[in-house]
Image (cartoon, rainbow, N blue to C red; front, side, top):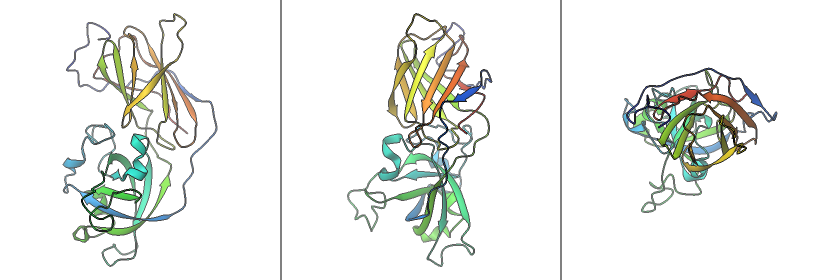
Amino acid sequence: MASAACTSTAVLVLLVSLAAVASTADARFRAMPWTPAHATFYGDETAAETMGGACGYGNLHATRYGTDTAALSTTLFLDGYGCGTCYQIRCVGTPDCYRGSPVITVTATNLCPPNWAQDSNNGGWCNPPRTHFDLAKPAFMKMAVWRAGIVPVMYRRVPCVRQGGIRFAFQGNPYWLLVYVMNVAGAGDVRDMWVKGSGGGGEGWMRMSHNWGASYQAFGQLGGQALSFKLTSYTTGQTILAADVAPPTWCIGLTYQARANFR
């Protein structure tokens, strides 16, 4: 634990606004061309089955992703490096599309795993190398009749628009810090991550390894130190420095927020 005040059952979300976030590169993400794919949905109108997921974002209402979300096929999920990316999707080429082909914007929060028992064109929609979106049902229902089950779509990757700063949710123990990275604007993704404590000792930035989904881990005793983070985008290579995000009294089970975000 970071301090005696911390408990392993802490579930409160603590949003702190400390030092500014500075960019060390000007590699802004822009919308990509429209590309054909297909979309299905999972769960029901409550989207209860979409909570959690392979990115580790937990309750998507609490983490502000809501129900405009998608599980990506393996080709797009990229072993978790696709977590947090944003897409515009519109239904095309079938009477099941709503008139006017409304465009929806979704965030990648989950993996649609391959189904090797089914043909890629008949049930195995998420089998590689297919690009496929398994949407939360409320998102699917914004563009097409849900009884269709599967519809052809056009999609494009777009910049993520987020309110507030990047969020860092802490898990782990006194010797192992596991951090889930959320609410990243711009490209939305994270390739590399480092942590630095305020305790000095000449160690400088400690590289964190990719654990799974949108989580990164560091092995070391960082308790009692203010923590700063450095992140690099998977898509653009842009580096963001989030200084003094968590105070020396940080706790496992809480979430800390930087002041700014990817631009």
